[in-house]
Image (tube, rainbow over all chains, first blue to last red):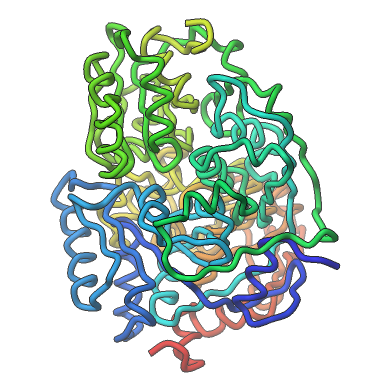
Length: 419
Length: 161
């Protein structure tokens, strides 16, 4: 029996020729990631266990992005703990305010992720990097502590769901709609413990930013990871970013998949997820007119340059509706600079949006856009769970950046194609 | 050992909302555990109580604060048909018992008195007299639990220093 991309990468990192689903292996890690919420707990476990060294200071990335710039004293104390640890162990890839970005946008930009590699991150959206053809998965703080100390992690080899993409995305439809449609089809545990392996001729038409968005939300279907084949677009993206040698893997022709889902990109409509699960999907026309109070455009899901371009294209020459607050958060400093050079930031501010420094803030109800009782946001983020962005009575509708921007202008959920 | 019962897809945002993650000490996490799904939980839960829930328990964020909060509340274990994979790892890594058993999850009612034998995976509903058998842990995972958590097991093996 052949192996999937994920199985091949895990086999290689476990020093094995062949692995099968269900097998437990210990794999060597190329990178261990943590943020300002999960790293302090990892440091505490690291210290409690009496550990005194990290496996490789160049293979650990610490990004202060969730509650930063620090929202309160407690958050500042967490960041101080991470800063101190980074200094003590001379962590090369430590990103503090001023150079940090939303971690899953930042790491690929900095060239820390490459095809065929294997990493863990103490953040559930670590699965984002499957977009470049590597294995990456979210873990908790104890796994992170163990990874920092040993460079190893235990994995159960996942079975796979193959997602075959056909055709090409239509205007105002993007990677977000692909993944929301998929989660709506298979459910929030439709890929539980499994890998989502994207394939088919439709992959070639997807930009890297689309692929990052799709892989990012693999976890929202319960998946261990989501992974894309490496093609010319991947290579072009890596050029000048990744200088170390890397080796792409391809799925075997006889690799086994538990299930195959086919998505026709030509037919895909702008899709939203209503409260309170990412699987609660509708096409935007079905819910157009739904009242909103706030719009958030940003996050590790949709805070990249192409996302901002799509939002700006809708907002250019228009105004955010009275009574609606629109918050735009470019995911990294570089994305902010690029957006400025293209005039996107000016478009946002002229339209009446608030533009912020990079932060995860509102996505998790941390800061920079928390909702009040009974308020509803349309957001390009990844989760619409109860209480995620505010009190339990607040609501979140997930959408792509063009739909979010159109809704900001209309003052209610709106289809950008008919604005 | 009374049971608290919840439905499918209990996510980590309701187990411990992100607004409390800036204070990751056990006492503070315990005060707010399950607050957004069951406001009375933290004030009524007693040491040894059990959470029985539906499928995909612990979905969402990777926050280890979620199993830590349940453990800090005195919850003895969670019984569900399936767990989200990061929650599953985290619970094992911190030595917080979780049991996969669809039938027990379906049949045990809120408020029932339930006892659990972790060595055998046997679950007994003392209120109804019915017993259930949870899926056993793979050996590798059992060893982590037996060592008292992931870091201890790595130190025992000499791979972490």
